Length: 124
Image 1 (cartoon, helix red, strand yellow):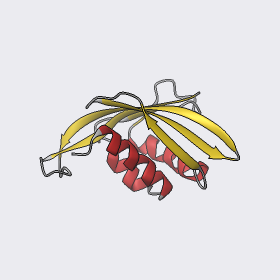
Image 2: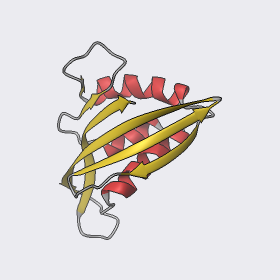
Image 3: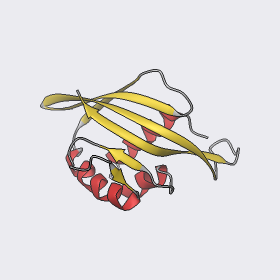
Image 4: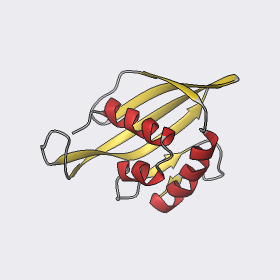
């Protein structure tokens, strides 16, 4: 099973590759939610369909961005990444990923995978 940090790195690698389906596969099927500062959704974007629409915008906005990822302390259930984006100007964000373990093809063959249950994005 990927660690929390490996899952977060995979999330951002898939953004670079513009692979929305791959990113959606990182999320649990059981009501995932993304809290992000750009929509009017106070309860977050709930479900893969709402997250998919958001990801399409993310993929366009991230084209050509340089990114530096640094991790705060994390656990099996939560990992926080401080991400610096750069393209002419610099923008920093805190991305807090909450995970659940689900049955599936784990990296180490243990029969489990780590999926994103929620993602909270806050720009600093």
